[in-house]
Amino acid sequence: MFSVSPAEVVTITIVALLVFGPQRLPEIARKIGKIGREVTRAAQELKTGIEREYDEATQPLDQVRRQLGATIEDTKPKSATEGSDSSDSSDSSEGSDPGSERADE
Image 1: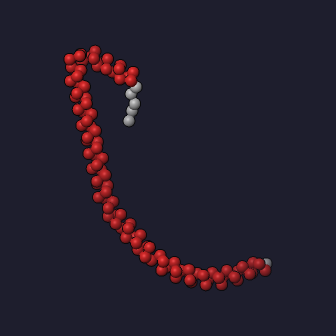
Image 2: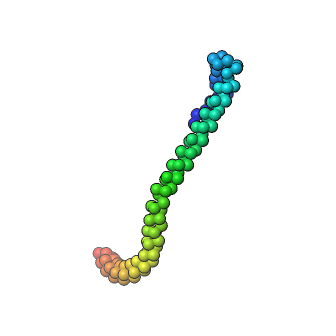
Image 3: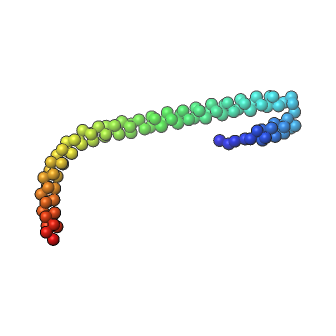
């Protein structure tokens, strides 16, 4: 997220020591550590919850996508075979006439 240089850490520690005193500083450091752990845990729980909700929301879409892909794959060889047979015969007859006319011109 952000970087803190060692000099900045030392400066912050010295200022905290002067403001809070040596007796309260360990207590404050423990509280800061505890808050940091809680924030990290809460962020991880939030991330996990969002990922779970996303997966639940996209699962039906993934199923439809797989079914659509299977349907396309099932129909593709048939239409490609039929399309290539009909297009080969029409393309070859059309291709020879215009090509020969262009060659003559």
